[in-house]
Image (cartoon, rainbow, N blue to C red; front, side):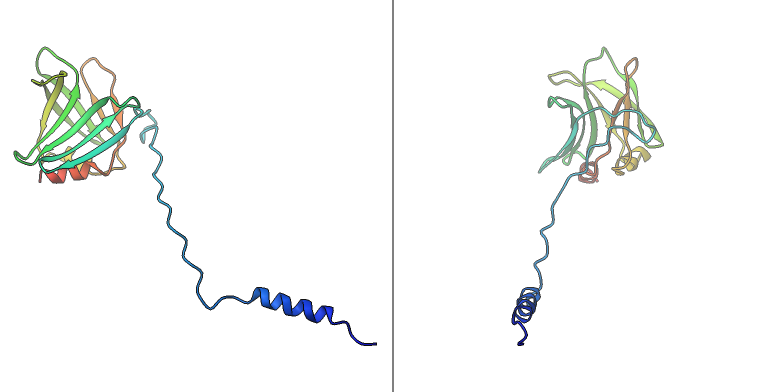
Length: 169
């Protein structure tokens, strides 16, 4: 009795299928994903829903936090021509107010004055040498802005803040 050629054929087919190519497999394409926006700060307090919009132009740079409807809630602006770093918040007041800003464990007082533009806004010029400015460079730290008699505005940090601050350096 002669042996059946079927096992030999099956072995040859299996060997042919499992033989790898001499060329390496192509590397997978990297997929860029964004980190989800945090919903609470390190203390567990809820953050204001929204997102940061970072813009750069010849005259300066800005970081604006906008709510889900696209309304700017707060902005950090750099004017390259004057070197001024300014924080603005929509709203009106009869005169200057003292607000508080906290970034992580750093705190500072802000003298917010009514701006001359429309719509009304309150503005504070920031001293780039203050430790609070260095704290803004850490995207892992949340930012809390508190106005007299108002609920605090709690915002996530963002790496784009460094571009605004560096534009005024």
